Image (cartoon, rainbow, N blue to C red; front, top):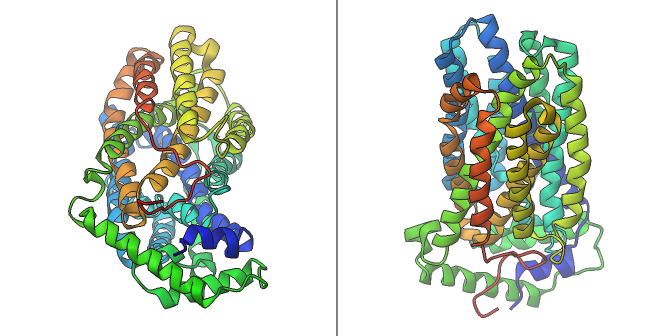
Length: 454
């Protein structure tokens, strides 16, 4: 028998196929960076332009998050049924339409519905990035390719701030409709490119027992990566089929079809991932909801935000080089380092207030990015192929369910004391740090899927 990870290492290798997939799938992560930054500024602008009260502001922020939760749940059970590629193409197409339609919204009620619908369709695509990348890359590069999605996320934020210089006058006024239309270009590009250049993952075909399709795709990718001399032999095809069938039999014996990610083998890791994701999302929302208000209160323009994102990108490169190094980095160590940095930054921000504003926000942003990247990668590496989209989708959905009420308590806390939310986040960061000690599965530099006797 021979596993697909062995085929990936000895026959397919790393080349144009992985680079093309990362670029196209990564456009959604690029849009994710745009969207979360845009959401907070849109709320600040509409509060002034449409004279919204505090409850309406909170509902506007939560509507998008609620839609994303529904989308994550849909992805959890859809991508394993109809395929990663079809799910990606359908929902990037719908996202593109809704982005442009939103720019014509003229009422608060219509905006709520559009943000909810956009959250639904966009949230269906967002878990697919880590799923795609983890399934097509070799073990030795899997962490870096996956963290490449995070670098694209930061590029999305930088792209968005550049647009703010042209379309907005300040954090609370400007041509937000034109800004939305330009924000729609990357997601439209992802949709069009996916129709022609994204291929279904071979692991999906193996899980569906569509072996002939899997073998044909392997041969195509070998040629695409310039490995013409690496012939895919008949005995290797037979060995891969035997390995795949044995893996499917193991899943049936574990009764994964009945209990899914809450089966005995995965229950502990699932609950830990849910808890960490909920707390990380709460921290993330504290940044994106409050940052424009904090900058406006300090009479800051867009330049400080742009500088912060550029510096964030360069610091993210450090994590990029550490994430596949089991000695200095690895998944769980990076989670622990990020949680410790969050604890310190939140505590100092609460104590020192605006004296520590820019440095504190920067540390929090790079730390939450480190957490999100390792959570996404850890999900893909924790669950077998049969449960991968279910596991990733549910972790993201549960995490955001915990964040949906955040506008309803973050804004009241902000109006009491602008830095009080960071005092609360300091306590939650300590919980994240504690929880990371209980993770015991780290597949840094290891095969994505292995049989029990391996």
